Image (cartoon, rainbow, N blue to C red; front, side, top):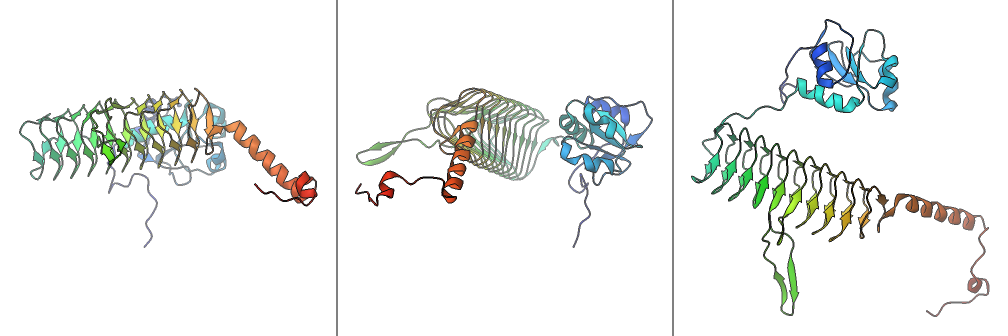
Length: 360
C-alpha cells in the first residue's frame, strides 16, 4: 500500500494556523512584502502547495525553486531574486534557522497534560509539580523532584533524588539516576542516564570495581538521543553543557565534561575524564580516548580515533587522528607513489635490485 507524502501528518503531529504572512515572517525573524495572505502549513519545495511555506538553504536545490508551487519560500537575500512569480520571498540571513522557527509555529511541541496516570508508581516523598505529566507505568523514586510542565513518558524510571528542572521531556523507557537536570532537557526513548561508570582496579586477585560516587549534571536545553548512555562520575561529576545535542547511540564515559553547544553524532564514544570545550563537533562513529582535552570549536571527523589532545579550532580525521590537511596530503602522496609504481617510474629499493632478501 502506498501512502501519500505529507509534512506534519495530523495523525502524529498537532498543527496550528492558518497563520498570516506577517506572523510567519515574524517567526522567521525575516522580511516579507505586506500582503494579506494566510498559510496553512509547511512542506519541501518539491511538494509544497500555494497555501504552504517552504525554504531554500542549500544552493544544490536552486533548480527545484524554479518549479515550486509553494505560496512562500524562506530564502537568503542572495537568492531572493530567483523566487518565481506568484511565490512570496521571506528573506532571512539564516534560512534553516528561520525554517526551524516557522516549523515550530505550525507544529509546536504539545504541552504537558497535568496529572499522574493511575498506573504510575510514585513514591510519597517525591515532589511533583501540579503542572507536570506522569505517564502510565512510570516510576518516580524517593525524594525525586519533577519541575513545572515536565512530561515523563510511559515506563520511564526517575530514580531516587533525581531533579528535573522545568519543561523537561523524558521519553518512554528512559532511566535516570544520580542526575540533576536543568530546564528544557529532552531525553529521547531508551536513554540511560547516571548508571555506573566503567571503573575498576586491576589487582592480583582480579578486577576490583571502584565505587562510582559522582553524578550527571545536564544543563539547560540539552537533547539526548534515543538509546544514548551517559555514565555518572567516579569521584567528580559528568557534565553535559547547556545547549548541546547528543545523537542516538552515543556513549559518554564517567567524568567527561562536555562544553556548551557541542554536537556528538551517532555511535560516537567519549572515554572517561576527557574534557571537551564549547562548540566542538564529534562526527559519527568517532572514538575519543580518555583523559584528553579537545579545544573549543574543534571538529572530529567521522570514524576518527582521537588519542591525543586537539587544539582549539582544529579539524582532525583518521585513526589515529591527525589534522585534516596532513591526512589528505599523505593520502595524495600515497596515491601518487602508487601510480608511479604502477607505471614503472619508481626505482626498486637497492636490496631488491640486487636480489637480496631480508633476514629480519
